[in-house]
Length: 199
Image (cartoon, rainbow, N blue to C red; front, side, top):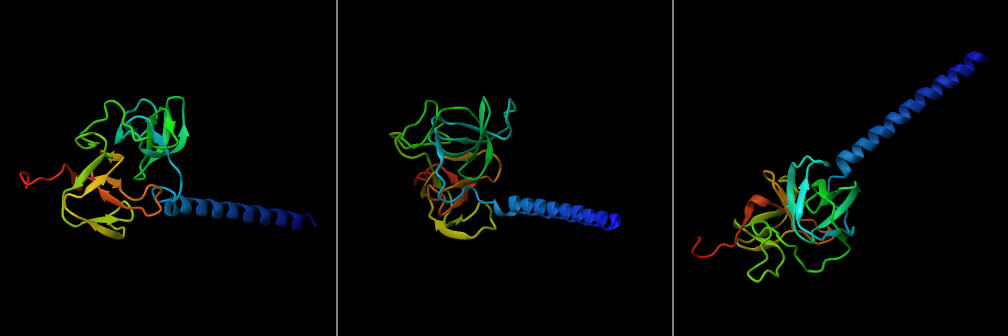
């Protein structure tokens, strides 16, 4: 009788371990393959009250991933006493220095917002923007060249942005505000407005 009880306990332990491994593998697969998109469709972001930098790591290491505008939408993932861990519009995840976050946009810019990244027009009241530098630039559904093309942009078309990646071949988000119809283009194809004297 003791042998059969021991066999049942061993069988239960083995199955329990196998089940744990299956659940762990399923969790890893979900994290790696099903959470690729930048934001959840329809999720409501918070908005920055000041422009700033997105850092790769928390703490004093200031390895900069990108720069965000005033009132840039972001999704708060975690926080410390000095920084927030956030996801910005193009899907980059990093850390920003703490600042007041807003529930809505108010159409303002903060002092010192760099014009080379966030040009707002001659009067300074437009959305931060760049212009398309090539004809028929493909807009992608995801931030990769393998992603489906959704449409093409014309040469010199104005594109509003809220985040500029500072690494090579970075992507910017140009889709709808709540990511229900995501669209991306590479930052390297954007620049200043083309005029006849520049062509």
